[in-house]
Image (tube, rainbow, N blue to C red; front, side, top):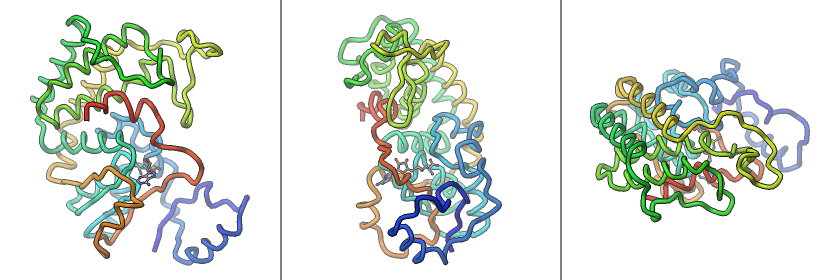
Length: 304
Ligand SMILES: C[S@@+](CC[C@H](N)C(=O)[O-])C[C@H]1O[C@@H](n2cnc3c(N)ncnc32)[C@H](O)[C@@H]1O
């Protein structure tokens, strides 16, 4: 049985022939679960949840939803072929299940593995020490050499105020020198998660809107206060440190497999009947390209 949330996708308007064919085939296997609310099936339910609040991934569903489904059905092995930031595999693994997530977007894997690292390998003392050193580097050291400058692509040129651009270079230089890959991942995640708010841009679907202060022609919007990179990073690192104990309690010992790639190919390589439960929210059936967001999928990730 497939449980679904009753959202817009099930409205009757715009029905096409192929859609009717799919509905005839799978309709009898669908049940609409009235217990799911907009809060459980969207990111809203994760907004203040330790770990998930680090990366505001609006396409995600909530920890609460996965807990509910896993507790109700008690599966052995859970798969999410469109794992996003890893909500389903992380939470299911935390419940003692074998769990795998497949995600095409690098930042999803970074976020998921970051939470796993905080829950398992890295201690809060190690993270605290690395975070302080990073902040010290960003605040006090001289500019980083040009090779550590933010790797802009054409559409991100001029996205940061000059001071942020310089601080980002210093952060990149520091992170490149961190030898522990789990600590490095957590620091990268912290930096990536604040890039947008420190920039003159805001993600709008797969495009960027620009603030007038960027000096870009036609940029007229005023995003209000744009925090310095150091300030945002410092807040995020604090928040991450605060969340360590909850993550260890909830997911410690759980080792979800987070696979970076397309489920179109990865699924073919998995043994049949490996999973007895799939919890997923597939990509929207439009032309939205999840991999195209410059803040999520470029920049700091180039270290990898
Ligand atoms: C609606 S989101 C799922 C969010 C997830 N439930 C969470 O809580 O974070 C759909 C995800 O599917 C991913 N995706 C799209 N095409 C994919 C593919 N071919 N293989 C794997 N992941 C894919 C997108 O990058 C996106 O993160």
